[in-house]
Length: 499
Image: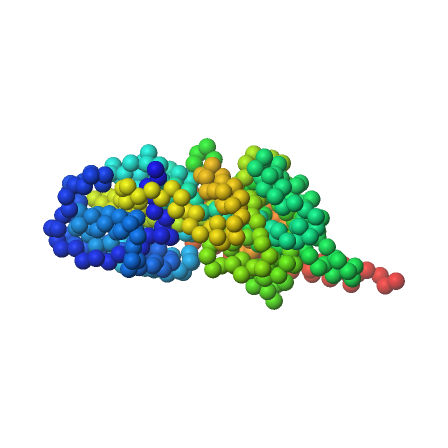
């Protein structure tokens, strides 16, 4: 029985604990560790999202969880409170930095951060190490090994996730009605996924078949595919056995985007999108333009995050046509379906002494386990069957499969910043979208100086200030070169004899 509580389900708890009100050992509960006494202080756990309060009418399992949390607080004389700090990524990081700058060790606080924003803090020593905490059982099956590996640099672990499975992310939604109208049995898409033949080739064949100009007026009535193009690109790279960055034999983060696996994926996704894709009309449409396109039956397939369909009251909740969902198809060099995940990571600021750090980490380790005796193996299902309108295959075969750690991948480009910034549009190029008008090799050549500098900063071989200076010098040199080339071209035009 797995004993975990999803971070998204952890409840706000602010109970006053009297100093010295220690609990007794209880059957099935963890053994009491002597020497941990927070003196009645409050430990704030600060995610970037809001938490719900305790239920006023808890069921048996909820009450068991509340009792367990009360026991932890009483046993270790601590008041645990969830308090949101900041919002997504860039908004939360300044708040964490401000907390570090204050250096107030009397305020006990830890943070829950998106994995896409951990690189710079790790490189700059913001977070404390968990690895040497002798109170934590590192063989515990509740650890998300993918997340722990991602947060490991050298001989330190800078953050953890106590949820053994990751939340699946990008996937392929399909409109069942449109497929049926075209004479396509959508059950066969699930069959292909199940028997391992759901590949780029199979996907492209269906996309091409569904791309239609019904009245031959030159205007596409139903697009083969829409969605988040960058999600398709990133996931296709990993589904083809590639990666953008990885560690070398010396433990240094290096560029790996020059492989044939990556080039093949970027070329395939660009060709697919140019031929059959409904892209964003920039800047007139928002980034999530594709939600309405897919919901209104103007595209047969949609690349989107799982939350858009499987969560309550979200993007496809009120879609009239029934939909299905499968994984991003495998590339010719890939051997399994993947989900490039972006889990939430628990971190402790590096301002506390060794014992305080150890004790904070241990309380969180205990807190995020399910109460003994509560079986939550299927808690992740929630209302998904109902949301999917009875499509059990979407839940049992797609979502369940992508929850398996075997299929979860962390994109190491997020060590350098948000993936959409590092790989997408930034001051150094437009690596992903650029595949629509350039070659992967040319795009890589353009971003390599910046990526090498960013890796050097993460690896501790270059300061952020020196990197910024290098980039400013490069911009100035590029601008001067462009100006000189333009002047030379203009001079050549003047010297050319009139016809």
